[in-house]
Length: 325
Ligand SMILES: *[C@@H]1O[C@H](CO)[C@@H](O)[C@H](O)[C@H]1NC(C)=O
Image (cartoon, rainbow, N blue to C red; front, side):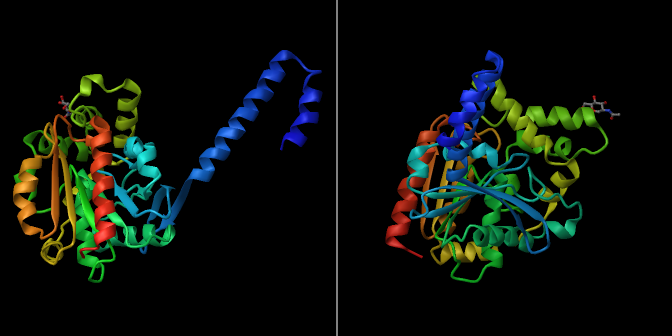
């Protein structure tokens, strides 16, 4: 590359100073791109029903494999703090994807496309696309409910090392009113609103303001990205993603059979009550570890990234070593 660049730069020296500046910036951009491409693999996968699933992977393929699923009105990009943490990427092979209806993934607008088995099919596409072996599955917020889709639709013993709920909703059903705050429930009509743009857009901003426990200190560019993520979710798709039904019985059966569960929650979560998640769910799992992170909100891996990383790393390392399931 240098050999080709040299005569090119000699030729450029005859041109104006402005043109030479441009050549320097081209070279710098090329270096950055090469580094990014070698560390992150980005794929558009196809789920069994044809829905497009956007996913990306980074990290150490020799470490435990871990899939991350984001919550309602967010995208895989919310996980940037964890995916930019070298302690995580040097130990784990980390894959994140946009769930159907969200981000860069397909947005079918019929209820048939939001059944439990189709959510499991998306996870199957991610596993096949990145050739994952017995991955851990991390579900943040509404993404936590995908654990129930996995348990209901994969053969047992489940080909997953364990489940992590990061400020997670255990499943969609009777648990929702026990763990969801009135605040987050008050946003649902606005997120689903299809006839009033004023209300639909304002709700996306209000929703984002309840992610961090220190929302006043969240940088403006980050908030703009979070609101932008929420706008990628069409209101009609929000209704379908929230209105779908799940059968948690197989999740509970696997919990009883020892499928490992890690619950990580913030004490200042404005959307889901971590103590309620732990008191309702932990007794039903034979192999469960729980952590309440002091002061963290609904996006604990933004509010206190180092604590979340520390708990995920220690737990996945222990489970991968002891193989309790
Ligand atoms: C639309 O929503 C806004 C904000 O919630 C509300 O003030 C307004 O009355 C609504 N408009 C209609 C036509 O319902």
